[in-house]
Image 1: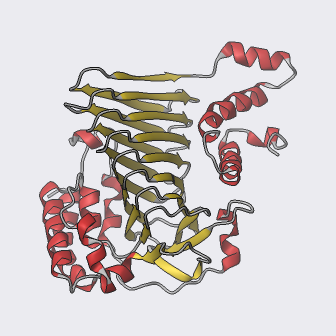
Image 2: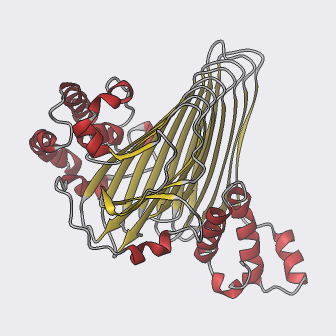
Image 3: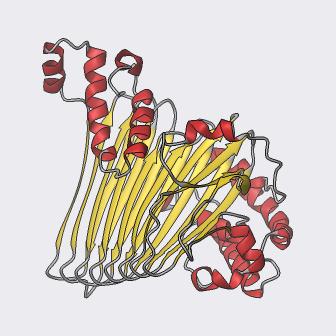
Length: 446
């Protein structure tokens, strides 16, 4: 029996008992959902490189972290002051802090929410108002072992409900922190429901305090009703020893607007799966992404946009900078379904390799089953332009300074699309500090 099979056997003995201790276990539909997800997880097993979706990503060396589940809420040892490094300057926002997979009301700050807007702990909703979740979670189609495991053992997360016509002016900052957790796993579930013609900005932000070797498995479901608009950020700054795996499923109705910003800097292994279903005429979707990794980091992005209804528009642009012996994977798929005429879609993935040992596996994919569409896709992999380097050198910059200017400009094309200036400046500084030799240009950012 191989290592992954041994762990699966241990989980089969452990998880049914754990499920009885999880929030919502008193609800029959929750028990049915959890059992169905768990059975599917055991059927498919822990993914290996033989699985096409995990062809370039080997999780076997990290699977031991799946064997530890913290059912009880840990005692909070974090002060509000310790969180300041994850704040976006003077950004005025609603902030909810989740420590080691559990919502911390002591560290959170929710004030003056618009009437009818609900931002709640998923654990509390599962215990007291599980009927609110049933339309979205009960019969959900799950794709992939980690999504199945999340549904089976999710223990907390955030539930956001925005009524029809309500505009949430302040961004909603969901700060997920790992704190001195070693070889442990958290399975977090978020649900965002945006009513007709509502508007909001939600920032999912992952970081670490005190070092962590935890495995974070988070799934976020987004339901955008007719005319709803959502700016959605996924910012990953996990500890270099952490594993951060997440999925986003978006269901768009007529004339809705979804704009995603996915930024990955940390973790030993990180993966994001984003699946957008454009199931209403006139819907619009924009996916922007940036990954900047080095050492032996591994970063993986899989996106899928389904154009199901006519007259929808999607744009996707991901960029990566890979250094050292790091590896990046990008797999972007756009499917234009039968009847989805007048689809307008474009996708691109551009990468800079800074080392001869750095690696990128990129696969933009386009599948069209309709006429009268406008679609494009492409990918580039290369190194810094020598002509541009020469130009900057001729203006008095050293080789190192010139390289950093070009790398920062490459990354900032993605960050410049971020509408919140406080968030954009924060990410620009983090990105700049990760560049090789960044100290040579400390005064570049203001």
